[in-house]
Each structure stands twice: as structure tokens, then as C-alpha cells.
Amino acid sequence: IAGITQAPTSQILAAGRRMTLRCTQDMRHNAMYWYRQDLGLGLRLIHYSNTAGTTGKGEVPDGYSVSRANTDDFPLTLASAVPSQTSVYFCASSDLAGKQFFGPGTRLTVL
Amino acid sequence: QQQVKQSPQSLIVQKGGISIINCAYENTAFDYFPWYQQFPGKGPALLIAIRPDVSEKKEGRFTISFNKSAKQFSLHIMDSQPGDSATYFCAARVSSSSGSARQLTFGSGTQLTVLP
Image 1 (cartoon, chains in turn orange, brown):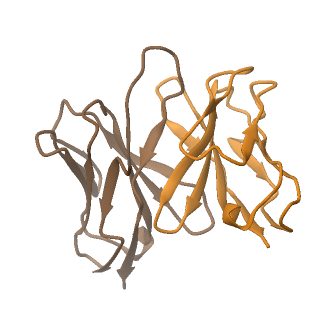
Image 2: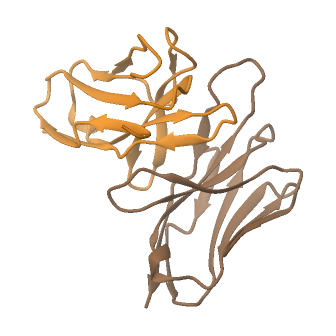
């Protein structure tokens, strides 16, 4: 593994179902982030984590939850998916200088 | 409230031309301004960044111009190439000494197409 990996690459999900998007980094970065990308809206921060054991809410946190049990993993959970959560989701981490590195993304469609 | 406004939404440039993308911000506490490049199906990648103590930064064909008084910054791509075709995002960040995650506020993106 080099950098950030995300799984799955894409997913089609029925409304009301629970879904966890996985994110793993091997750079030992303390800070991690989840963004959603929608056309015309850019990247919007959902949740972030300063370090293992801590999380915080970003710009659009409603309907999403995160956990940070260790440094490497930062899963994003949709407890009950809705069509408005159809988007491309990016996980990122940042080094001590604040430079952010992004994963390849997960394309999620909620029907 | 959109704190970083980016324009244009899309841009078409001939090969060899200059591509210019503009961003304006509202929060005067922003002190770090990166540009990200994103190819289809990929995550964004840092292209170039500037701090407000300089008015210009150049890396190869890419230049950031920064106007602190106008609260504006722009990306110039000189001698644009078809391989530069991508979506470009400006962003801004408030550096924090409290240890909290250094959150970026992104512009809405510009889809650049460079014609051969």
C-alpha cells in the first residue's frame, strides 16, 4: 500500500440501507478527512479527525458518522442512506505541514 | 455561505495558450492558498500553493498570483497542453496553532479543456 486506499471503488445502494466506506492510509498521518464531491459544489468536508480517538464535524455532517480507532483507518458510515447522499466520496490525510493527500474516491449511488 | 468563489466553471483553451482561473475569498484569516488538480476518476492532487506574504509563485508552467488587498488569487497555466485538461480547485485554509486538523475550504472547481 502506498498512500491512501478507499473501498469500495463504487457502490449502488438502496435507500434506507446502511453503508460503510473504508479508508486506510500508510503514511502515519495524524489528521484525516472525509469529503463529498458534487458537480458545481466542489469538495465539501463531512468529518475530520485530528488524531486517533478524536473526530469532528465538517461543513455537511448530517447523515454521516465516523470513527478513528487507530492512526491508519478512518471509516465513514451512512446509517440510513438517502438519494441526496449520491456523490463521490474522497478520503484524505495531511502531513505535519498541512499538505493534504487524497485517495482515489468512492462513487456512491443511492436509489 | 461559500467562502471561496471560483470562476470560470469551465474553460476551453487552445494548445499553447494561457489558462487563467480566478478565486476570491472572504475570510481574512485564511493564510494558505493551494491549488489542486484532478483528473477524471482520480483524487485531487496538490499542484502549487502560496502564502500571503508573497504576490506570486511560479513552478514550471504554473503560476499563482495573489492580491491580498483584493482578497483574490489566480492560477495561470502558460503554454497550456492537452495533458493539462483536468478539473482545478482553489482552496484556502486558516493555519491553527491549537492542533486541530487544518481544514481546507474549496472553490467549486474549473473544468479545463486544452484543445490540440
